[in-house]
Image: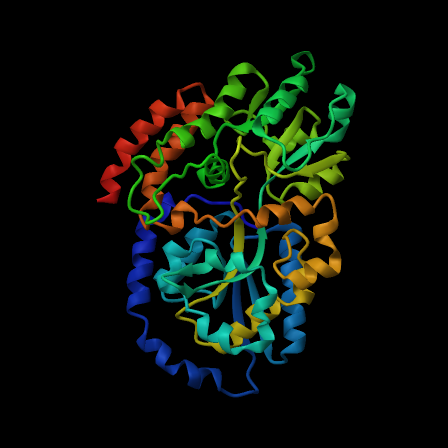
Length: 423
């Protein structure tokens, strides 16, 4: 599953993309005729992915299985890796996008995507009620569905059982609070061993921070997406972010992932941080590194419900695709039980697969699914089309807090600097 990618560098390319999408409708008039062409000709379906390595190999295997079940079809898997957004935007801009693609940034791309409501509503084989319902909220713009959920992760706290045992500290349990988290981090910090209780990111993705902010009753933006004053710089928002900055200040957390610094994943694998917060992505690497790892739900603030944030990957179909029916068949196959069970880097999006594999009963995986039940807030980027511009100021403010600045002060300034984008 792709981790979040900044889209700042794409403004010019995306403008061309949108102009092309608006002018490409006439070409689609011939879609039905082209899809019903000679059965003797091989149809090539292009599928764009951001994955690499083992995840890409699995996707290529899924494509081969689809070809076997659909004779005369060739699935061309296009691995865009870190250049995913640039290459995808270029394809849209040139009127030559892949037929099917991974997608998460629907506000940016939805004008170039085919609405999937008619496909999903009419096709009983999709078994839409088998999906976790909350996942569809992330693929809709103006109540139109542009993506079918393919994989997701919520966020949990990883902990190193060996370090807890050595310090005689009990393992954390679901339902714990941030005050307990901070106390544990202090107990598990031993600077003589360069060991810290927690790893704080020097450069945070503000998308991921929303779960903590929501849990404290704050938000980056108003529910209608029009106001940041009193939200992005609210007391609750500032407190949630300041908490991590204070842990770095008092030495119970160490900064990770900055310039010249190791990533938090690597430091955790090296046994030098006792707790680390992330999604599903690093779990297998932790196991392979021999870490006796546990997972637990995100802590709560006093008398407030824990809230989570989803990172979701979905499959979308290009509006300019000349073979939408075939593209839909591939999307449907990709989110079938068979294919979902092949893609081990993702959490299953179907309840039937989770029940079959007993994922929600496995102590390592259960917290992800309990956090899914808590992930019903709408992320800021889905609420305002100018969020990328606002987010630049917010990201700089959060980075400053991690390096010692006062959260309330820098968030107040970030709001002032961002107001022009909301007019």
